[in-house]
Length: 217
Image (tube, rainbow, N blue to C red; front, side, top):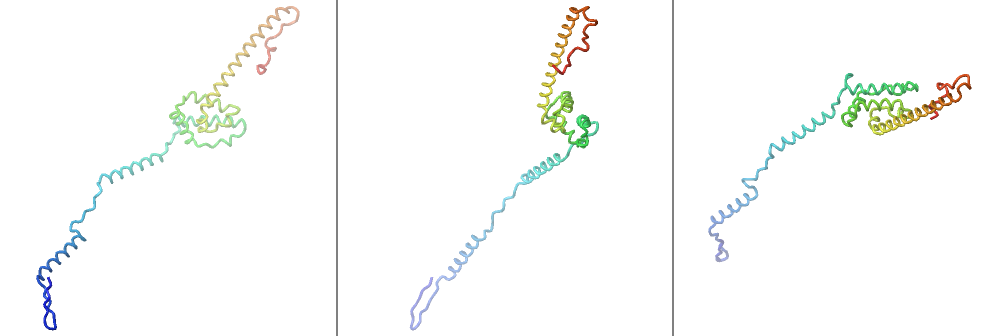
């Protein structure tokens, strides 16, 4: 508290309770300092250890998966799929040799071919006996022999090849039956003619040379 007293040609200023105001100022200064710099700051929350462990496990799983994908199966010469690849390649070479183009199909990656045959059997679930029949048919076919030159193409066209093969075989069997019936009819007619003309000709009609060629039917 400040008080003033007038005197002659001067003024006297008196500060009352100075010590009290000093303590108040010190306390206010300390309070402001505490507000700006708290003595117990909030600690940074620590991440649980199990989160980091889970991240590490995920990374390990991804690495293991990638390594499994990079590892390729190696097919030995005794492996059934390797033997299928060799058989298919041999059939292709036989047809190519007839047309003198075996140099165009000589080189083949047997490991990749064997893996394609594995897919045909294990993934596409094809019957091995049917597969061999289709290979024998398509590699000797006038059209498919020049279009099916790899196991991958064989797998892509498998259904179409199977249907075409069955259709052509059924058609050829029907044609053979018609030819047999025609031959039987002609034999019967020749027998009748021989009986009717017996004694007229020096020798009967021979049924071994008089039948028409089968290609005309």
